[in-house]
Image 1 (cartoon, rainbow, N blue to C red):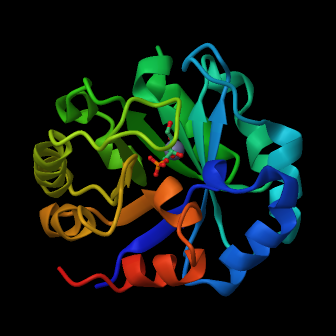
Image 2: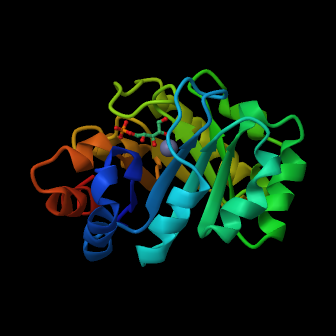
Length: 218
Ligand code: DX5
Ligand code: ZN
């Protein structure tokens, strides 16, 4: 089965956002990954609701929104209205994660939970049956273009076991430092969704790079 490919718009040319989104529409990308950073949960600020709305006006594919923000419960409905199909919140940012997951579902989006590199997958034991996506961060969130953390492979195996054990519908998404070299091993371990930012957008031919990832042998 080929993976779901979700290029991260964070690495695109913001001055030419419409043509970048049109390239993603033409490409074999399945989703558009939207990185929202608030300068508090992570030490960087990316973009917010108006930019996501602008992307949504041109995108012909689902927006996979990754909220790297504190108090995400205050903004779920607004991100949904701005075109999000999937909304992932960070485990580390939610005191009442179960409530936030229900809130995401109640507004009609699919619910995801993202885990920082140091957070074990075992913390999801009592929520995994309710979530549709788990985003394993394979870099420390906040910046594109960082080095892939090797420990990610064993986290995928542990998460896969947990998903099977709890009969969860969750897809496993890997976010950070993904490229053509590590993709086969990530997929072998059980990843379903690959996010790729700099690897796609710094390539000479991003459309072909997306196709190569989509069709990678593993
Ligand atoms: C990091 C973001 C990632 C990032 C991935 O905080 O969540 O989605 O854009 O970028 P690359 O693929 O360049 O590591
Ligand atoms: Zn992300």
